[in-house]
Length: 340
Ligand SMILES: Cc1cc2nc3c(=O)[nH]c(=O)nc-3n(C[C@H](O)[C@H](O)[C@H](O)COP(=O)(O)OP(=O)(O)OC[C@H]3O[C@@H](n4cnc5c(N)ncnc54)[C@H](O)[C@@H]3O)c2cc1C
Image 1 (cartoon, rainbow, N blue to C red):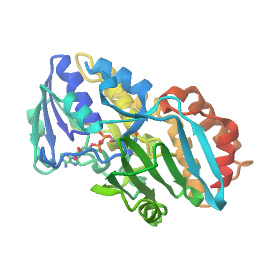
Image 2: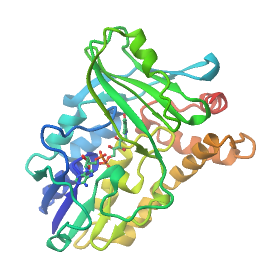
Image 3: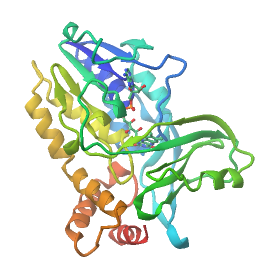
Image 4: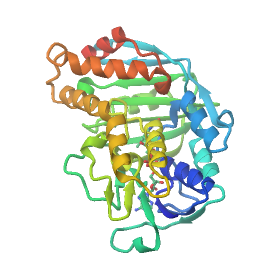
């Protein structure tokens, strides 16, 4: 079959690799130029999952790891502090990883696709992997985005571990994700756009040098709120259809899982019903997590009234502990929910 992939991010680059491997014809359209193409992301994810995806795509994930986390410190409102034991959370060279995935595929850089001008009929399927933009699919009235930006820093001294600040009312969080050798991503996502922690970090680290400032909002609306997944021969895969864990704004692994669901639904023909059903089924609990986040943001979350919702989130996360790459503890989760 002949595929066009719009967007060379996580989903687009992985799908290009896997489709070429299966003998399909693939053309990738990426709006950035080769010089400006850069994954806007803090590059943190669980090595357990990325090892598997990399292996399927013919890459050795060890070669991309920048920092293996041991613990994550989370500062909370009213001076509280929580530490999470890390069980596989790493930062990795996402830029090189995505580029290596696409070796052998045809990439048209500097091509910003649009619904109005794209030659849809030249392809059997057009995959909308434009992430946040969802360029080739209709907008969803239930979409929800959180503004975010970050700095790529170097020369940072004394920050060797993952560090976050959780904002009151779960309105977002600040992060510092180390990339090794004094490099790291420091930034924040915040509904209120206050980005607490960013200025303070610069004050504490006058030695830090800014290499890049990048940003874009993160989609928190889960797949259930991001239909339709299709239009004509366009199929949405990845963040374009909401595959982001809403509590963390974490979309690398969920987008790759979505790619595998797409690949499973692709036999001689693409089974759109199977794809839709499996996406909604797999990401079903993201809807619960999203409800928790929105209730908390609106000051309406009650640990008694919403106990079932909270337990559902805990049970699912616990089952997928390796996929998250950090300890999932009921005690700590309750403390976090109460403290925020
Ligand atoms: C600041 C920030 C930090 C984050 N940190 C993490 C993290 O540490 N861990 C984690 O798991 N998740 C993180 N995320 C979320 C994660 O990066 C995304 O959910 C994930 O990359 C989504 O993958 P994707 O392939 O669907 O989209 P993307 O990776 O966003 O790729 C979309 C691609 O489409 C291209 N594009 C867009 N419009 C067009 C167009 N019209 N034509 C052609 N090309 C187009 C873009 O240039 C881009 O290359 C972060 C997000 C942000 C914004």
